Length: 92
Image (cartoon, rainbow, N blue to C red; front, side):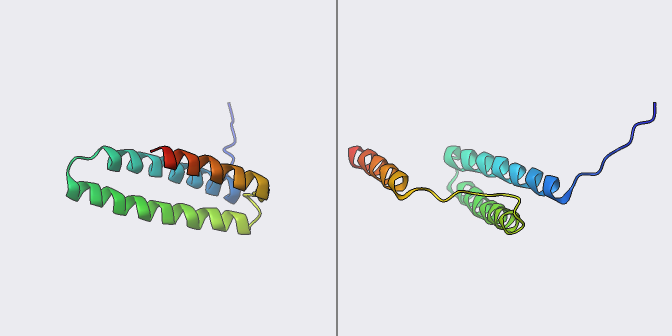
């Protein structure tokens, strides 16, 4: 059986990295929320900020290359979301 190994494209690699970064930030977010030790919590939060910066860099690079397209939100939808979360905040 002769199988060829196909290399991943740059876009596939970047997409995988971005997905991994999203997962990593979720894990650090949970750990920082559940951490009892203040020093360790601060360390988790610092790492979380660093991981978000990495994720943002990857996302921006993918957008520049046309590999991650986003659609602008309609102002009506933005206003609706803003009102929804302002109402929730007022109830707290």
